[in-house]
Length: 167
Image (cartoon, rainbow, N blue to C red; front, side, top):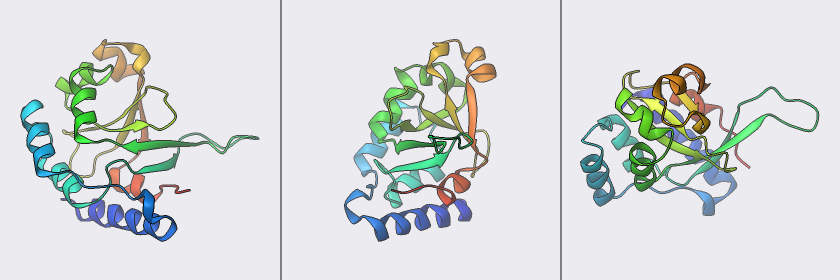
């Protein structure tokens, strides 16, 4: 696993635990990992499997600066880190995940405020990839999603963890 991803994920968990020990996430179980890899044809990278099976990110909610702040709105959006079953569902059955999975995108989180626009990483962009929000309104049109409905919310996974807002 990328050292920066590991360090920033650990730092995020430490920051959360200092504020609220009840809302720390959990790690993936061995059975969940086996099922995830089986159902997604072993396409989830080993480094990501290591991340979710060693750092308690699953079900953790945190914010990130998605928009410029303006009067009455701080520009912060919130996500919830996905459970292995949610990753499978988003990649196989749900839009837009089912449309972009074959292009190498894996769902990692859902919007905490029910926008329906989940968050993804590309397995082809290294060990500390950018994080994207994908607009579900483009349906199953893969090219439209990737050209017009994919929004980079963090330059890297480690930056997402480093800059996370915790309530």
